[in-house]
Length: 294
Image (tube, rainbow, N blue to C red; front, side):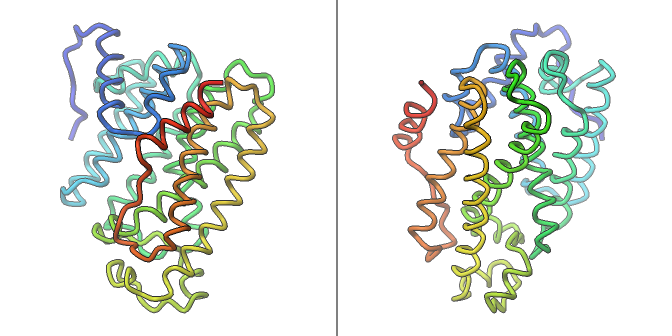
């Protein structure tokens, strides 16, 4: 199955507008915060986000697993075509200029696909903690590496080691928060990302995802994993404090939105794990005003 193509006569400006519309229509918390970036960085991060949206929609879609795998394989071929200078899909074409400008590594686009393929293979259920951290690195850390290449391009404090640690640390914190928020949605898809070691330590008996939602020991596991997320948020804050404000701002927006979400989850104490906790538009706007416009 080949990646979808588009009219090659489309102008680069049309591609940028199409990608921006994809990001805006997705309802992501960060659209307006990202609007504050300089144009080249804004368009680059929108294109990266649109790529993530494309492949995530495949992994989370309702098609048979074999079809999902074929479509993700087609995207792997499209990434290779992109780096060979022959992209076909509109999102891949929108990525061509950011890849040249910010030297975005091909391996990270493939890492994201690795994570999506794991989701598309029948779903992850009670992974080992090492497997969970590996998954977080693929689906969130890889995005962070790409983002830091964009945000930190001209920041002398954002050396390669700092960019990598921040990407992995913040990515892990964000993904763990996603997991703690999406227990119900994931269970409906047959997925359970809580690690086996922590389930055993809390004496959680259920492993079938929907059955686990009613296990009385579930909040113990979630509180435990929330502590790990808090540790990662704290380390990410320390790393951000050492960067230039313009570099740190977009990362800080993501950190503060998700940290507030984790506050809400902890206050609820996972008493209704089937419900997906959300922040209001007003709360998100407050974070943008407080941490984005400085």
